[in-house]
Amino acid sequence: MTPMPVNPAGSPLKGIRGQLLTFKADPFLYNEKECYDYYTDALVVIRDGHIIEVGDYKDVAPKYPDLKDVETYTDSIIMPGFIDCHVHYVQSSMIGSFGDTLLNWLDRYAFPTEAKFRDKAFADEVAHEFMKQLLEQGTTTANVFSTTFATSVDALFEESERYDTRMITGKVLQDRNLPDSLKDESAEESILESERLLKKWHHRGRQLYAIIPRFAPTSTPRQLELAGELYQRYIDQGVYMHTHLDEMQSEIDWVTQLFPDVDNYTDVYKKYGLVDKRSVMAHCCIVREEEWQTLHECQCGVAHCPSSNLFLGDGEFRYWEAKEQSRPVRVGMGTDVGGGTNFSIPRQLGEAYKVAMLQMRSLDAVKSFYLATRGGAEALHLENTIGSIAPGYEADIAVLDLKPSEFAAWRMKYTGNIFERLFVLMTLGLNNMNKATYVAGRKVYDRSRDNKWMYAAEIDASADVKPAKEQKSR
Image (cartoon, rainbow, N blue to C red; front, side, top):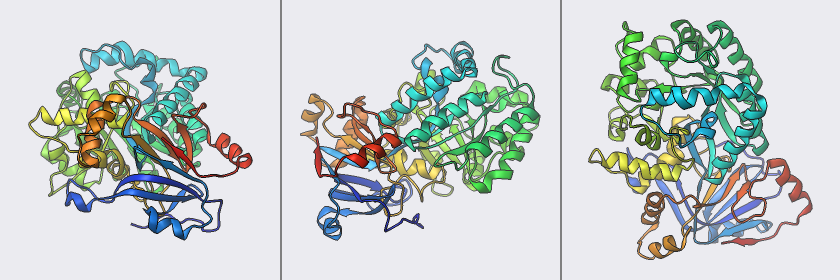
């Protein structure tokens, strides 16, 4: 791992102290105990939005006698900020809508809701609320579906920029098999608009762009062809491709009818140059072995979205197939709101456990919280930037409350180690388990603060007038 450079003579130091867990390797592939670092009393030292050191407090603190701005957390666990590898922010206002099948649910709720995003004011409102929900749950990076309209892309990136979060999104490409209110007028114009937005937003601050065909049935072969050409032009600049794959059998059957000359669903995307090292495929519940092999060889990321799959009655993700030792695939977690029923990655882990148990498998807390952090970063090819708490990484951090309710505090008395406690948290699925969220070193969310959410500029302005001091957070 080559850490990102940091400026040793930059702005003042900041510190975060407490119990800490971070991952450094994949516990699906290696000995679990060698895949993480756990400290009962750690100090994270931050400067200019990056981590410059982390370790036992007694070892690290003496090296920084000028470090006065330290926030200490008790009854908590400091972790890397969570990573949501697949979510539809434009469906936030319809979360929890009744569904029977995926395709009927799309027609009845998703498509009419997304058509509203032609209105920039509506897009701004939803983006504002969506970002608040992510940060409240400790999510600091998300790979996001917007919708057809440039207004939806601008609204999310603008709000992300205010918090200085690292977000990935792009215009959704869809020119057939959906209502006219959402349909691209032409394949050619849709690609020109996507490239315009790419040039506007990609690598603007921490923002990253994705080429997003909704899924194969809603794009003509011509649009998929042009999307692939656009992706290949910019892939070496870090641009992504984000879509859905193998979510449910009826969808797969539809793809087979629309593309009869292609062997499988993955090969539809591969035919058009859309399967490559920064391709992220959501769901992947019913995947053939030859498809797993392709995803492995092309270094694609996969987003496991258990809440959505259970809610819509789709397929059941098989993590043991994805993580087959001979050809492992990069896997992270996704909420898939609004098919998913909450914005919390830890709560998704509880759902992932249930999906595995339905298939006579299980997921322990070590593997689960790896998927929530470093696993998501690996799925997005950002594992040298986010997803771990280590020198050179961007200081995106979540602080989980190990006693978020009276009952949880009582239950924790009967746990033996940190992973038993984390398993209790993800299983109980409480909505208030995150105390604080740091983005590039700034505490943009604080559960105990009067103003719980603060933009980066607000925090910087308050730091200019408030003297640094050591403080405790309970």
